[in-house]
Image 1 (cartoon, helix red, strand yellow):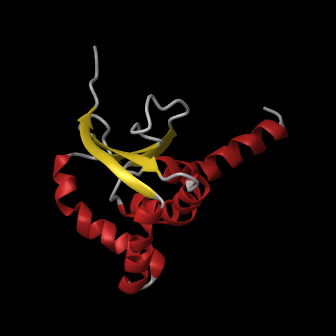
Image 2 (image 1 turned 180 degrees about the vertical axis):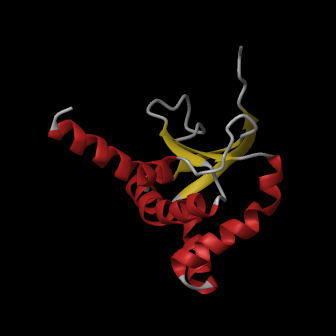
Length: 148
């Protein structure tokens, strides 16, 4: 094995935990996962603000939530071709380890927000702005089906 291959392998091994932590939390089984799908309608002219808040607010809170095991993973989706004016524009999918995890999720998520924002007043102020730029159309819980 040449020295370049060795350095590449070392770099991959050293970076793997951080890459893993950003995409999927440790300890999540996958087979009993429950997925929460949140459908958003972005208000006219507010798309930049919506995605800015997703990056500047949701992402830091999500990283804490991943680290603390509140969620196993999350993904954002954009609907490039809404079927009607009432169709969703953005969708967030959050993976939880199982249904039992949903029972303690509100308290654990609140702790993640407090860690990022520092105070309950700051959390409340951020949350009060959300209706200005988006509406939640619906929230669904789904289970993944594994075909054999």
